[in-house]
Image: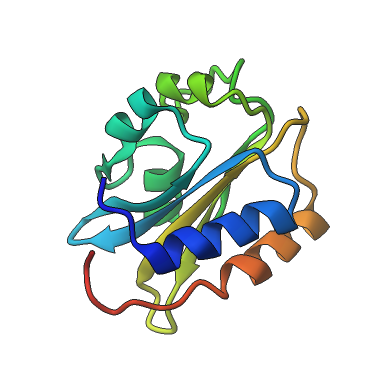
Length: 142
């Protein structure tokens, strides 16, 4: 994983501001997503999510759908949307937030995991989306 220092600092502030346990930033890279920042993600998971193929896992689904994808519990999800390695993160509720440009293209996907179980309500999701939108736009692939 190549860490982008700017994305890393932004992610650390984002996770702290929203009382998250862990998180990631994936930047659009061709058709896929490339990890540019991570916080509290175990090494085996970092390896597994360094490059996320289009449509795979929560980040890939958020990328394709251009809308958030969430789970009530990373530990017990049976939907097939979650990479089984995500259980190693130790979080429960989680959401992948696509950052969509004006032209409809996805520029990045921000993931955040929490220590509580349950659905992330619409108000909280809106707050997270608004905050995630502050991630600097990088027109170039990482």
